[in-house]
Structures are given as C-alpha cells and as structure tokens.
Amino acid sequence: MARGPDATRPGPRATDAAAARGRAFAQSHCSACHAVVADHFSPNPDAPPFENVVDEEGLTRETLTWWLRHSHNFPEIMNFEIADHEVDALAAYMLTLRQPGTRRR
Image 1 (cartoon, one colour):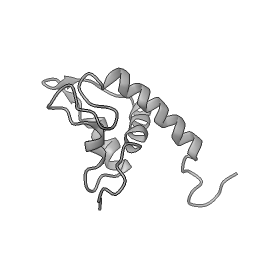
Image 2 (cartoon, helix red, strand yellow):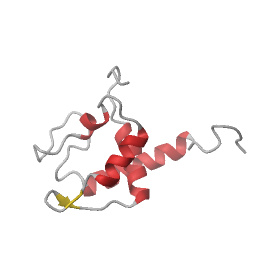
Image 3 (cartoon, helix red, strand yellow):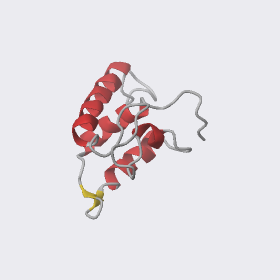
Image 4 (cartoon, rainbow, N blue to C red):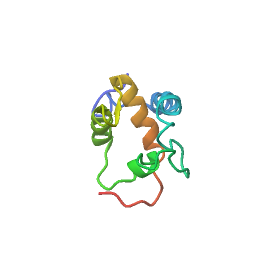
C-alpha cells in the first residue's frame, strides 16, 4: 500500500486507462467541432484543436479540468455538460497531446 505524498496520485495504469476513456469520449462527443488528435485541423474553425489547448502557457491539470467543466455551458455555443468523471478522463487524454519542447510556465 502506497503511503506519503504520492499515495493519492493515480498510478501509470490508472492514468493510461483514464486517458483511453478520455480519448473515446473525445472522439464521440467532441470531434464534430474540435480536432481531438494531434496534427489535425478542427472541423469548426472557432473550436481550437485539443493540442493547442494543452500547449497554452500556464496550463495545469487543475486549470484544464476547471476550464472543461465550465467551457461548454453556454447555450449560444453549445449547451453541453460533462460529468466530473468524464472531465477527469478527458483532461488525462488531452494532456497526452502536449508537444515536447513547448515552453510552459
């Protein structure tokens, strides 16, 4: 049993499983507007590709999950709510799209 500061952190397999669930969610719920895989353009030019979102300076897992929970609750854009467990999985997947060497604070 893990103890100490890392005891609550998900292990690599849990993170991989969450990212896989997040990718499936992205493909079924987000891909009509966003590019959900690297090196693609979004079908909707007003919707940023996921890799652009995660390469924003200062982005953290916490800021990404907050943004995902609050970004689509605008009826004029898209009346779409995402359950907390789906947000966590989607964030885990999106963070796998970070480009190596991108400068972030």
